[in-house]
Length: 123
Image 1: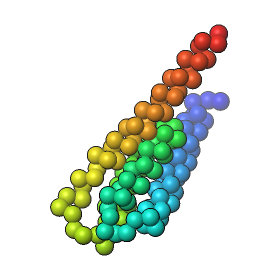
Image 2: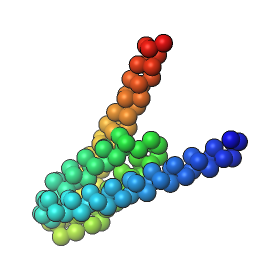
Image 3: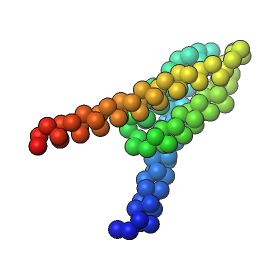
Image 4: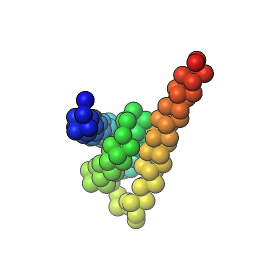
């Protein structure tokens, strides 16, 4: 396999992860709408942030996790806050998404380090 094929495989994998993250966000937004009424944006943001953290744990590329969190926050700000009482700072929920993604990506890296450490111990 040459370098061009390897780069193409990485691009295809990134596109697949972006699609999976986007579909996960859409499915989670439907779940948030069903679970919490429009008057409870905190419940909705917790559902969306939890999904972002779980998706960040399962996605291999940090760029896909970052884009997924951005999409989730955009869906939250545009769709899920529609019909809610006006909030003084709707962007105030941004740190919740950031913390969720950092915890998810950190969890993934710790699991990878633990796997590498176990493989090193077996030798």
